[in-house]
Image 1: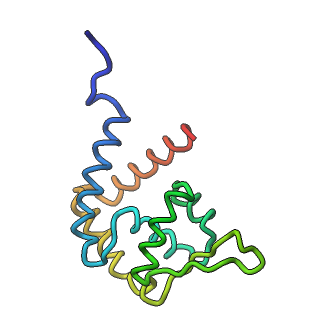
Image 2 (image 1 turned 90 degrees about the vertical axis):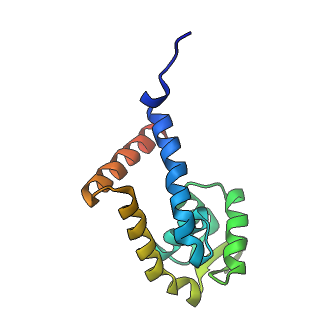
Length: 140
């Protein structure tokens, strides 16, 4: 029986690498009390604060229903607040708290340590990011 060779598949390379990278972040994020998905949410908020759940979900590529438990946990840590949008009680606005904002510098160091751990140069990392963005554009 023949079929595609596992280690020659782009999908497998991305899938298996993603798991290892996420695992590497676990110990780096522990002092911040964040999981990797929560870290992704925080990175998006450090780039643009005071956004709707819909906009935040679209930015990071998660469904609104997946966002809810992440946001509740971040709120319990006092990293964010969720408030109704003025004039629209169906939509909540997500905002960083002072504590959540203060984590940005620690997060920059975490991201730097994670990049160093990959063994990639900055140029190689940018090439990889560009290729991943191309894949996402073409498959979306």
